[in-house]
Amino acid sequence: MAVLLTGGAGFIGSHTAVALMETWKQRGKKEQLVIVDNLYNAQAEVIDRITAITGTRPAFVQADVADRDAMETLFNTYEITAVIHFAGYKAVGESVSKPVAYYRNNLDTTLTLLETMARHGCKQLIFSSSATVYSVGDKVPFTEETKELGCTNPYGWTKYMIEQILRDTAAAHPDMSVVLLRYFNPIGAHPSGLIGERPNGIPNNLMPYITQVAAGIRPKLSVFGNDYPTPDGTGVRDYIHVVDLAKGHVAALDYAEGHTGCEVFNLGTGVGYSVLDIVHAFEQANGIHIPYEIAPRRPGDIASCYAATDKAKKLLGWQAEYNLADMCRDSWNWQKSISE
Ligand code: WQD
Image (cartoon, rainbow, N blue to C red; front, side):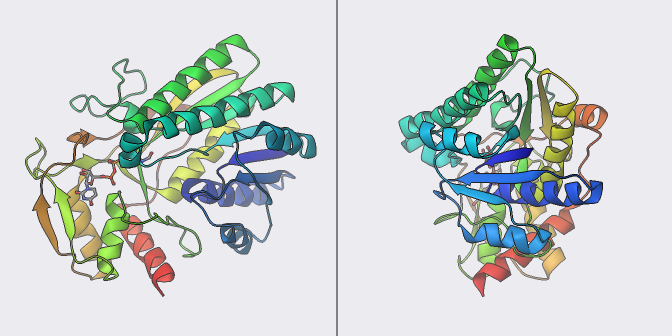
């Protein structure tokens, strides 16, 4: 029996691989982990690092999930009983300038995966969705039941569309189990400092930018707007430690094994922090000054975004445990390890 992680060499995927293998070891469960990744936005050495952390080497297949022949060969090689689907492009800004590439890649990978799963009788799928589908900024905390969805960029629309594809697929196949996980803002890194987020070029996201300022790679942080209707005027988000997020996937897989149908869950902490809260928390946790300047708002940003977390707690038995200081410390620990 094997569980497949598409895009499993990436930031969230690699942390989920570690969480799954550590859980199986604790439970004495004999499962095989298979990672398929085209390494477009990941490095092969991550597999070695997952092995170093867990003591077990996952199977690794370098392939594009949209490649039908490669996926057929993979499913013929391993008895895949469940899939966690991370593979996809995920840069919001890039999606605005390259919309067709985003729709082609994120939808093709998903459709090829679903066709292959159907041919091989694989009925459990966990999907890496995003809080970006909640674009209504005045309804926080966002609950899964809200019908007011909508996106401000092509990346978000691919997540929205894939959620719909998966709902329809689950409706057509009542013996399937589909779990949609809407991530809020994942930050931090595994405490070992062996795996973490490696953005290409100039980081789009706040925490990797802050850690590069701390490392002297960037001179200062630009705070995108301080005139939002928030306590200090800067954007408020729900930052969640990537290890907590990874454990949410383990809980989702347990849930999928015991249920059928399609269910959606927020994976967040339920707490919103502003940009300046993050800057100050990082400075306090690491004793490093982060110079910043106030810059114009970033197009597409909303004022506040944070999760209602009751459903995941009640149905998955999962809630985030790491605090903001942990996230800031582990983010910096990782940055130092890749800056050496
Ligand atoms: C957070 C806050 C910015 C950078 C995105 C995607 C979402 C998910 C997480 C994939 C905002 C401010 C940022 C900077 C800043 N990704 N900021 N200066 O935009 O909430 O979410 O990443 O699933 O789908 O949309 O995250 O880290 O880019 O921004 O002031 O240099 O930090 O304005 O308020 P975001 P972010």
